Image (cartoon, rainbow, N blue to C red; front, side, top):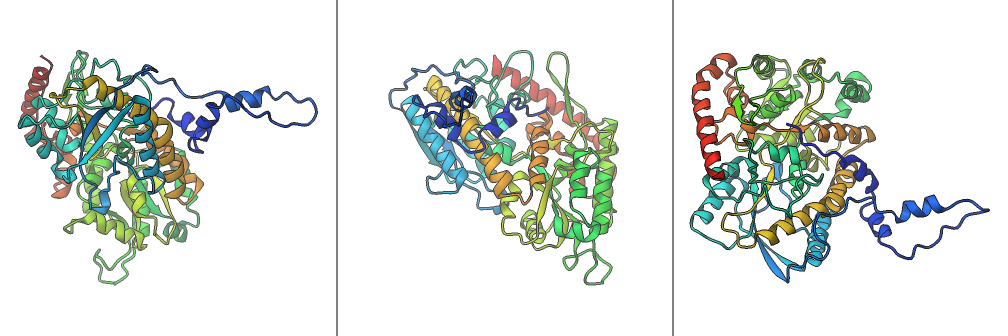
Length: 503
């Protein structure tokens, strides 16, 4: 399901210059614009004074009376391949950290409250287990939790989090919330929303899948790097085209007739989250919904079989492709090799660009390829380390926390996301104008699958292609057929547990 942001691009364009436009709109004594002759200046004045923002859904006179909101969050990951943003921000940090800090200060001032951000020191991979331990002990210290999708979504089935569907202070139909994504984590006719995300969680945008190519190497082979951009814009960027370029980009530099660390690669990939991106990019679907919004599994669909055939050919047979499984972290090594000019293509996420700032060669950003040219649109999966916000069932400040969340999301939509998207990502982390156009395509194609979000509760149903690829197993159809009974049983249990949380 798509991550729909209907007004994002228009507002981002209006706010490229940060909060300048907002500051002008608040002015009550606008200085007249000097003109020659008798030219009508009313249009100019209106453009300066009219506030383009959607009004906040919160009551203007809402006052939380100095309430302190205690926020549980995990530490920044020391793994440079998956760095998370610090919710606290930093007034002396980079432009994104400054905007996060300013957001928090604005929310505190508007609502008359105070944030108490508690960096628990928990690493991202341990978030779910750590929160379970806190909540099962009956600890009521924290009012709001910042969690990781892959290891925390299952906690909703254990009555750990509050259903936020009917909270009047959360305007979840507004564009600062990723409504489609939020709804995809819910099932059944009755609303059951345990996690919210969107602009309040900038890490979610950073976790959208994307690919990188070395423009210097590409130009050496094809004379013009814009050829690839144009293929993307024309809808002709396909998996077969990727493998064609990867073969052309490979050079057996050490002359031993083996693809190894002494060569120049066409494509370097890892055996886990990159495989998710390739599959979803070509349209893999592991779950669908019936008329009552109840999920059912689709792992045996023929298109999934055809997609995995392409993936298997890529990792096991295609010339110039290396699926790096070197421990402890092949992703970091792949980024390093790509930065050194040792590969033509690198799969990753938007946040990967932050690790390429020192790369000497120019690089470009493109979406993951389509299955073929008949595929209507590009599809970009959101990495399962995306961050979500939730309230514990023990929360004693529900209205206050919901008001704070709404204000955070609102300010982020207008002040934080444009800074990251327009200023940092499109300007600081990219090397050309066409990359920024492609980023719009990547952003607008973001999606996920319920079987992927709740993979830990569904016996890994949303990660079958990852599992097969890691072991270089060829026969998807047989493997899926053997798993379907266990996966369906897990889904039945999942639905039962989910319905019990509603009662």
